[in-house]
Length: 159
Image (tube, rainbow, N blue to C red):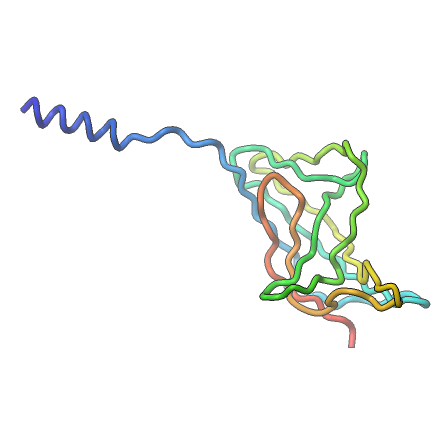
């Protein structure tokens, strides 16, 4: 009887676990899955897509979103092509940020909504040729303490 009791106690201690650290977890969605860019400009054609992004903190700790300038209310983000590619999205912004910009905080359970103006191109070759891919499947990611990419969506240029 004692052996059984000691065995049960030993198993209970051996199967116990240490408490885990709080988890940072977010979901990131866009308002559409297909965006058709609008064209503007006279010398260089620029394309714009307006994306409404919803970022929800589904974890147990606050999430910090990096900003580019003091007083900025918009997080730093990137736009990447989806799939097996070494190319870059033409809609991926080039950030020129200053140090010491305060982060934006998304508390556990909170949802943040941002209206992002994605503009392309953002870089050109020395010959003036736009760089990057304009059409295709992309995702947005914020510079944050929780890794979360948006749903996949498609950007198309106007016909």
